[in-house]
Structures are given as C-alpha cells and as structure tokens.
Image 1 (spheres, rainbow, N blue to C red):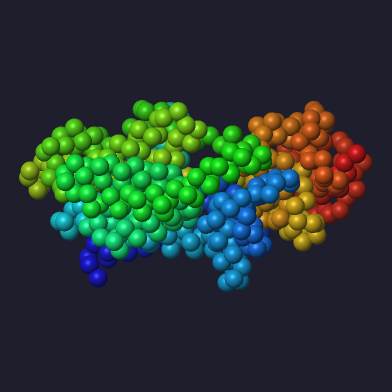
Image 2: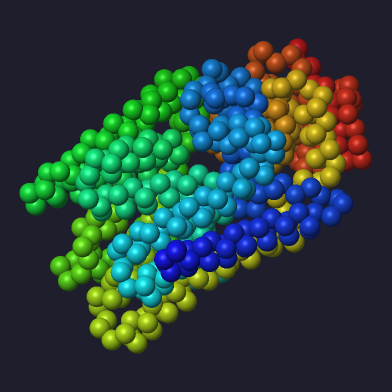
Length: 508
C-alpha cells in the first residue's frame, strides 16, 4: 500500500475514533433519567435523515414528507436514504446504527479518494501528507469572533469541510468521495473506460448530492473547452457521458419538486443562502488567502492540473452568490480546493524548505482550533444533557408507546422541539418538527407555541389536516414549559407515566 493511503487510513482512524468517542460518551452520559437521541452534530437535520430512512425501512422507494400527515404521493427522491433504510431492514439493524455505520464507511472512502487526488497533484510525499491532514482536520478562523457571538460558516457549513461532513451525515462524505474520484478521472487520459466511469459517477452524484454534480459538470465543460482549444478533442466524451449520466435524474428532481403540489410548497421554503462574503472569507482563512494569491499568480504556478484547480475554486464561489435559494449547497468541498491551492501557493511563493514548513505550520495551527472548538461544543451539549440531543426517559417511553399503539401516520400534537424527535423514533407525524421539513413551518411553530401556552387555541386547528379525526396530544415537560394548557382536563387519557400524559384530541 502506498504511504499516502496509509496516512489516509490513519487520518480516518483519528476522525472515526473522535466520532465514536462522542457517540459512546453521549450514550454513557444518559444515565437512568435520559435517552440519548443518537446524533451529536446538528441533531435537527440528523433526525430528519433518520425519519427518511424509516420510510425505506418500512419498504418505500417513493419519498414522502415524514413530518406531514398529508404528504401526498411523493416522488423518487432521497433515494440514498431510502436505500439505507432498506439496507437496515435487510440486515436486521436499526436505522440509527446504519446511519452511523454509513458515516464511518463513507468517511474512509472520502479520505482515500482525497489522498489519491492529492498525490496526483502534489507528487512530493511529505507535502502530500501535510495537505491531506490539513484538508481532513482543518477549518477556518471563525473561532476568532466567537467571543462576539458571531456564528461563522466553519461552524455550520458542514458540506464545505471534510471534518464537518463526516460529523454531519452519511451523504456529505459519500458525495465528496464520488466528486473527488470524478476529478481524478477528469485529470486522466480520456479513454472510453474512463468515459463510462464518468457516466456512472455522475449518475451516482445526481442521486447523492445533486449540487456537486452541477459543479463537476461545469468543471468538465470548462476543462474540455480548454483542451479543445489546445487541440485535444478526445476529452469531449467526458462531457457527453457526464451529461447523459447525471442530467436526466437532475431534471427529474427539479421537475417533481416544482410540479408536485406538496413537494413544491416544501421546496419554496427550503432556503439555504450563502454566508456573507466576510463570513465565508474568515471561515476559509487562512487557506483561502493563500489560495487567492495563488490564483492571482497563476502563471507562476507549477502544476500540470493548475487550470482545473483554479476553475474548481472559482465555480462554487460564483455559484454560491447567484440569486438562488440554495446557494450554500454549491460550497460543498470548498475547503479542499482552498487547502490544495494554499499548499501549492506555499511551495510557489517560498523557496527555502524550512520557510515552507514554517508557513505551513502557521496555516495548520490557525486551522485546527475551529475543529477542536466544535468537538468541545458537542461535548458540552452531552455534559449538559441538551434538550436537542436527549429525550427524558419518560418522553422516550411515551414515544415508544405511540409507535407501538397508534396507526402509522397518526398526528401527534407536541411542542416544536419534541416534534423533531417523533418522526425519527416512530411512524407518527407532527404539526411542526423542522424548519424546512414542515410545510408553512414558521406559522405552524407559532401556532403550536400559542396553543401550548394557552393563549390561542383556535389557530392550531387551521393546520390540522381535514382527514384527521383523532390526534394525540403529547403533554410532557417541554410542553408544560410553554405555559398552561387548561383544555386537557376535558380530554381522554390514553397513556401516562411519571412525566408524560398522552390524550386523545378529537376533531369536531
């Protein structure tokens, strides 16, 4: 095995150990009073992915909104998470176990692909290893403004950083792995087997992470155009096979998200704008500073693939600031190219080896604190039994009762915070559980809070589907914290434990 791959496996071991350590610590810290939700980084999104996997676990290949009681017919999207759900059922393991197993496996694939790409660009083994560790563990300098309570992108733009991608979910590292292999093939000889490989990888990327597909197709187009100008037209097969492999399913997703009445409402509120320019620059510094200097001094850069690298940096930065609702999704993997160009810039700008090493150490020392702080924040959430990470034992037992004793798809009226957990741990739907996954989420969240506070009992009924005859009202510590709900005195109790009472909530 080549030394660079040994380094990649060692890096994977370090990152996976940190991930597993957090999960084990989270589980052991639950004690007898709490149940660990199973997700440490961004649990709101994590629970939504588990809810999607549950649909596959139950046999579905057509995705419907798991938080909605009236989700419509659905569509063949989110196939990767539906597949993981099917795989969980086939292997007889829980969706949560499969979710984390997939994260770890995909992390290894991503880091091996990253190592292969780096070794292709930086032949010097020492510098290739250094670049790998910077890409794998590095982050930005957002930690500098933490005392001012300014959340920077290097804390939440998970798809942009390999380290955060692994923490976040399975599809981010897998999408990056496919993307990186595509780049390697693009830099290789345009043979017919490679063209077929481009077709397969673009098809996979359209399923796993469509926004990375847009980036790679633009990259392929520009690289092919450059090669044609240089009198090499053989690479046009890469573009043709990439378009045929990736575009059909991409078009299908766009069409169904616009034409389906339920999914179109869901899509309309799904907005992920790019961070402000200063925020992004700080969140990618110091790597992006060196990367931009390298681009400016492009002619001095010594690299066979420098044209591809520069285009790779510019494409997502431009796409991210076009007037589009999902801007930030185009920034997937942006830290990788910033780090690559930063290292190439160090080697270009400084001639003495000791100076190069000194500058790299400064870059690395400024890039690591952000990742450490994220780990500390997650550890703090575990120590404090954050309500986003944990259910009380009574809440968990009540959700299990709902799962085992109510029809699938039954509506549960619960606090907005608890609504994030219910579809991930049962087959029940909720009024509100996620900012993007619940339709008309802002209105519904407000209506729920007004309902449980006892201030406005009627507005909530507007958000209960007409076909719901009986809902279940979950009344536990989170709901009590919102205020006094007097109407429960007139409702029938169907379940109770020391903290939670579940009532029937009949619709008139």
